[in-house]
Every structure is written in structure tokens, then in C-alpha cells.
Length: 285
Image 1: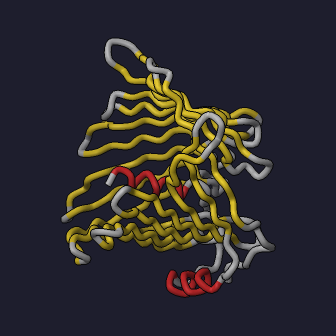
Image 2 (image 1 turned 30 degrees about the vertical axis):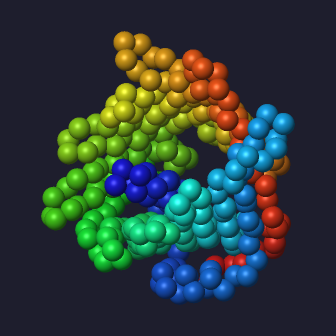
């Protein structure tokens, strides 16, 4: 459930308090499915000489005319099958439908979100077992805007069997960029995230994960492309347990990463190979 809420949070960070015309989710899914051209990204584990050791995942993307992703399918390969996530986005980057399935167990979960005035107002998360719905979770959103109509706070709450489970509070600056995020579960604060900007660009993100006693730091370049991720484990003091360095292309897509584990200094090399180029895109009606 925590991973699901995190995905929902990412999907609403770019929404605002403006007016747009909405199409039904089914109409959008059918239209996005009709887009033929796509970009496929292969994730390979390689050795230090970049010789392929294993294929880790295959990702398929589709974009609209503004190069905003409207469809993403990620198949993560396992020794006994695969795990596949399918996500549909509106042209404003809002996630509106998602499905997770396993090659051995079938559908694991689905989630769907509905909008009004370019903002997600409610969501429904269904958990499956043996391809049948096992649990239902309702997601509710509450937005706050300042006297200029700019979003300055969002509260996301999940309700399971009429009881509030998880709550996330998001705070924004005058540019409607997220600055602080607090994740609460059953009255316990499990995670706090801080977003730090320079010249209106995200340059650093810090996550304090109290549930797992971890401190995670992300560093970005001036174009908001990720440079590094460092993970620290907190016991008596903070100890760095890993660092991942990323290399991106001119479009900001990750093309290579090197993860170093401490104190062993073991390195894991990953490369991303793209098949197909972005086309002119399709407009979302």
C-alpha cells in the first residue's frame, strides 16, 4: 500500500488549480492504445566492460505531441517469470489508470483515478487474489489554494473498510513546486521528504524513512536530471550503505548507472538501451 500511495503522490505533483475539459478514462485508454509508435527501453546488467550479464527489464513508452508520457509498460524479468506494470497518464502527467500483474499469479492490483478541474479528486485501489478482488481501498484528495488560486497544500487519505489508514500531506511554494511531504500511517509519521530548489530547479531531495531507519539523498543537475542517490542506514549514527551514480542523455533519460555498496565496495553496472525514437507525438483529445 505504501508503494501505491507513493505512486499517487508523484502523479499529482504537477497538477494545478486551473480549468480543463476532461475525457472519460475509458475514452483516453482507447485513444492511447490506438497510438502505434512507441519507444522501448531495455535495462541490462553488465560487467565493468559493459558486456551484458542479464536482462533486467523492458519498458515501453508512448508520448503526446508535447513529449509527455501518456503510457508506460514496465516488465521486470524474474527467474520464474515476470512482473508487469501498466500505467496510463493524462497529457498533464496525471496517472489515471494502473494495473500490476504477475506471470504466475495473474492480476495483483488495479488503481483508477478521476479528475475535476485538472485535479485528481478520488481514486480506487483494488487488490486481487486468484484474479478476484480481495480488498478495496478508496483514495480521497483535498486541495488548498492561496488567494491567487495557486495550490499550496494537498492532503491524500486512504480509507479501508471506512477507517482512515494512510495520510499524506504535500506542501508547495509560490511556483506550485512541492517543498515538503509527510507520510502518516495510523497516526505514526513514517516518512518525511524535503525538496530543495536552486533557480527554480529541483537540485536535491532528502527522504527520512523512519520506518526503515534510512536516510536517502538525491542530487540533480540544473536541468533536474538525476546525478546521484545515496542511502544511509541509521543506527547509532548514519552509515552510508550505497551510492548510485547516473548518466543521462540530452533528453534527460538515464542511459547508465553504477551502484556501489558499502563497506564492500561491490559495484553493479546497469545500462539502458533504447529502441525506436520519439515521434511527433499524439495529441490527447
